Image (tube, rainbow, N blue to C red):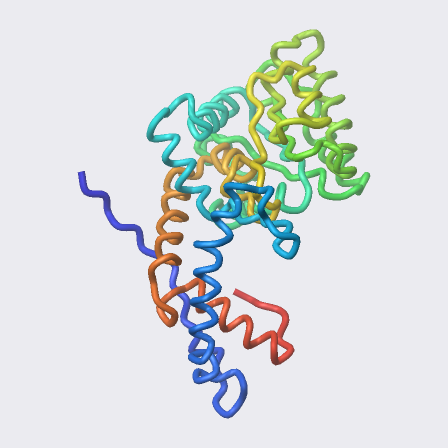
Length: 307
């Protein structure tokens, strides 16, 4: 079966160039060899170094480049193993939460929540949480906390959530994201929301286990707490992937799937852009062209980008 080729994001820098300055087309064209060298170093050197972390030189630490081929790896595992793959488990958990609760609270800070929040802002109706359950396609409302120590925000959301009842419309769940589990803002928020959820579920330990979904490292405080609670699913924050690049891991994919976004298509689009980055020449390569224009702009003191 032939799949339709995904349309790619394009980048037109023509409006950025100013004739007679150091930010003109000729200056960009002169960057082509350096941009090509950077691409080759990323693909031929950095990606291979990640296969042997002990060989990564100090000047390249931390080398958080494992995100580059992550879409292909996740999709490949999903096509091989389906339900038992990480993506299969993410989809199953998202569907279970859809059937169990009307609200999901995502706890995380920095890259642990910003990618998911950006996906919600970009792909959902601006007032998604105000829509009826039917208008949301049966998907839960989503709230983001644990990214500050604002007591008013925490108290207000806890009051809104109220006590979890016996109906789907009155129940809520927690997705808590922290690689170590020791990040102060997220840890404090999780303590408050977990206590409220424990009070709401009463003696129903099985229900509590199902309503807490951790995304964390292979060890650490949150990993240990998830084991103590007995959470049926614990997703991994992958090694070699910095927080700001984690949106295409379980960190971003789980909230996106809960919202009903097509995460398979999202990963396929990312994989298509990876192939574009690997093969398209400078001048036709959205990634390299954006880097080149950004470099020239920074040299002229323009440090803020508005897309």
